[in-house]
Image (tube, rainbow, N blue to C red):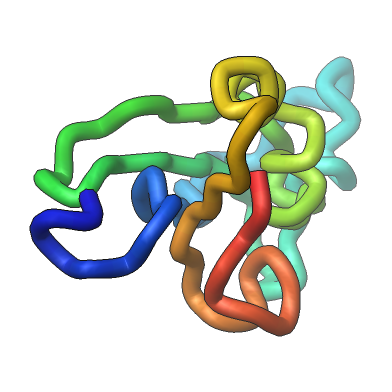
Length: 106
């Protein structure tokens, strides 16, 4: 929100987190859920606005998926690209989670 933080064209904030799970059954290919932090997890990604209202949650990717992969393949990204096709828009992200910049172009 430009009026609140004076950062133009920023829609909100995005971040991912790993939610630990028990070892998945073999039919789910447990290796996919093994993370770089050496535990089984589901990788969840949340997008919120400047008032901390949750706009989107993606909570079904196995732990081996990166935040960048999840966002790149998300329905939320496609919807934002369509809705804001005529103007640039950005999400703020922790440095390194979706690239080298804290700004992620939608």
